Length: 383
Ligand code: MG
Image (cartoon, rainbow, N blue to C red):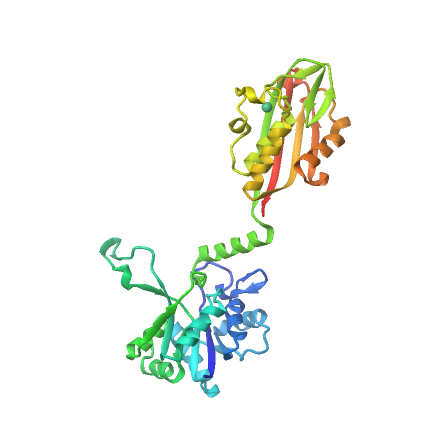
């Protein structure tokens, strides 16, 4: 067997709305075309790879492909069928026994799929990857359904399509200018039996805008992971007392804060922000204030539980920004110990935590020294 692979990349890709043709679009530093070529270039049973490109893409091609093992590209025709024939004629001089024809818009072709096609070529002159159809398929016309097709008898077809070289070249030469979408159709027209092997759901064809944004999203997620943000807000009223709990720190003061738990308004805001980042509701759902169980509880319990919930949702805290709003006590003297407390309990570096103390300029309930408000924002990342 002498196998040459033909990669069809001459399309202009007008359906993607990209500024460059889709096969030259890059993600994670590699063009779609290069990704479509590589599995063939590195396959031990494939002798050579021939790419068919659009004449206007010559510069794009050379900036996308730096492989030296590959044959120089040839220029394709207006349509896919014409380009395929040009490619077949270009590789004729190499005297291949077989050819694998692949669309450049399928960058996720696997070595295993290529193996399956090559292996079937020892029994068949033509072999294509196919997948059963899971959706119901209907024949429609002018926006109306004509009939429902029997999907048991339908399969969706992929590339690479493998052929006995002379057989497919002759079939193309005998059926020019018919504008077929795949090479197997031409083989069928020439009466050649076409075998199928299992395709792959990963071997998708990049066709339109949403396919391109899907792979963009996928590559962005891979690089930075999914990022989540949560915000939290809480208020507690002053009451008589001689200290208050604020961000895990006991602060001597001429008043206390009223609440069912220890009324640590800052930890409640952070707890809600963490739950928010995980899409996991709010503090009251887990620790209802009417439940006597939480009376005078240290709010650290709530904070630790919220962090556990985030972890169960595969989220790791990236940073926390907390703003405590009150006329008094002064926050600044306690910032360092608050940071150390949060860092220890939440197990994140203290340089990922920021605490700000603000007054309310004498305005509103905070300005009248009726209580303390706290705002928190949490950033978390999927792991
Ligand atoms: Mg509260």
